[in-house]
Image 1 (cartoon, rainbow, N blue to C red):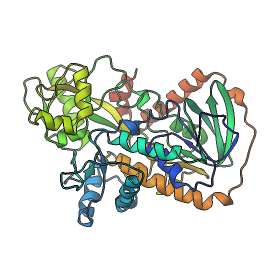
Image 2 (cartoon, rainbow, N blue to C red; image 1 turned 180 degrees about the vertical axis):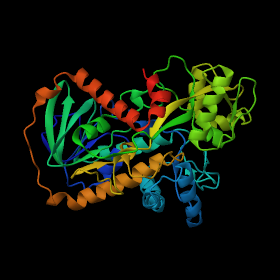
Image 3 (cartoon, rainbow, N blue to C red; image 1 turned 60 degrees about the vertical axis):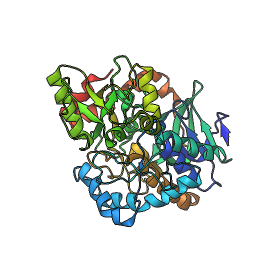
Image 4 (cartoon, rainbow, N blue to C red; image 1 turned 90 degrees about the vertical axis):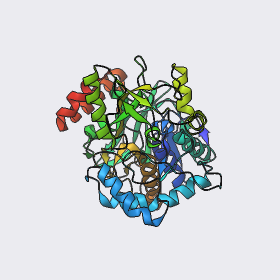
Length: 442
């Protein structure tokens, strides 16, 4: 595998994004095809890497109906049922593949998998690796990608535009080491994550600014539910933090409770995220404080250190000991349920263009994502995209239309234009949400 070497002008496939969706797509494409993977920042700086709680799976056939209903209920029954069915049915196979790639999930003393539960789940069905599940999965997938000679990985490489002619994607315009150039491919996969970088309070990396959605709007690529944006109930309240540190829903799943300024519990912590978020928002207004308190003091310290070592460590670094004191938490933008409209193979309204992971909207999540479905959804549909690409790519001709690179000379103006395009579309679709959350951008 080449990494940060010279970028060619022609590839079979370009994958934009190096989170689990992009990595798994690359691993699911036949190794005989030449693939370019790019990341706007460091390779590991994807939101997949930050995922704490875990990954859902169908641990036994009898749980299918319950898993299906939990997903629909959390999504306010706006989910596409066929997509939900595909995700759940494929989950055991995905777990097997992850284990083959070296992913380690926590186990009980007898060697059986240790499952946890999070908000809106009716049972324990979430596999995890301590409280850094995303890091574990991303690292192991990246290790496997780096073993593939057909894949070139480039970090600090930014997609500026899509090359679309006659409703067919033929490549991208990118910027690498200060040089902008057109790079052509038979098929392009967008795995660029969500839009957290547009919000003042977000658990996302700041560089994840929804570039794919702005380009979709520029090129007439169909979007769906771009205003369905999840606010996570519990990020650690740190006044000057650029990125909010997530306090995993698993903390509440393991018995953590939310308290007002008088130390009183005010909500059922295991209700869907949007419900808990609204309850916290109302309580903050009543208390006159920009946070509420979260307590997990019921859990023995050794159990906190075993189950939530990363969260405990970060809280200690900013002055809170989870085992003996409550911590301040506040809602923060976390996840986008909408995105570029895609089918269950990641295909979009433009030929030879795929969208996977948080960038895609295949309808699994409906109006509100069920906790720990994001990693599973990303992997299931990324694999299916890889299958279809492998199946059809030999029948696709590579085109190299001319591109006027001068259009991108003013990078700052281009970025600002993209930001405005996305925010205006969110406002057009949901002015109430925009006024409540988007007007508080940094």
